[in-house]
Image 1: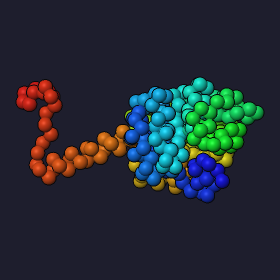
Image 2: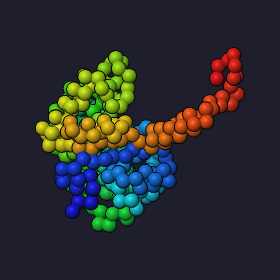
Image 3: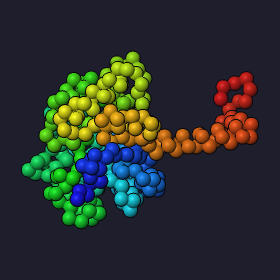
Image 4: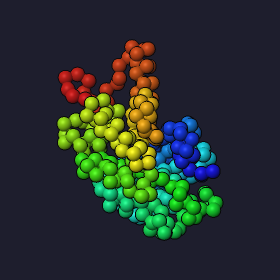
Length: 273
């Protein structure tokens, strides 16, 4: 059986619930991993962390059995291979705009003769006994389509041998295709964005790869699953923490009839704060 839970679920025809980590802290990672996600990725691109935080976060999540992955900062072989060597089973690569870039990305994911990944699985070799060339068929390469150029080349990108899926980030996809007409954000409801998101899923299906979508709410993620998205990310640690804290504070204020205290140094009347 596959050691990549994502692949196992896909083989069974089941959608994958994916978590997102942007806070560079092992305890936060451990808490998130214990909540029942199928897979969780660490955002090395935009997260408040670097590789020195990634490794202990991977270690903290191991006991949960969740499949771990990462979004790398860019199409750069060093960080892709280093994340794999740390034990990532799924790699999300941003800003893939051409089939050539997609092929380059895939080549960094796999050992020869299928790619040019260098051998040295420092943590992966310990955490996953027997780690070796068999990982070529276990790790997942997910390319992000985020620009008008990427959309124009979508069919060619999706047909790239060895590419496992397209990961859609709605915020950058909106920025990249709407030329400032729409603000970035998740859970798009504009007809043109829904049409584009659905189109990406159809192109993925036609090419035998998986469509993945970053969502803000479980309701939208469930709707996306109906559009053909096989992996959906539902929010992430920073938004979940902020949302839960804000709801708790609001509930207290409502129950006690109190107002939020002015920030330190603020002028309570007659001035800005």
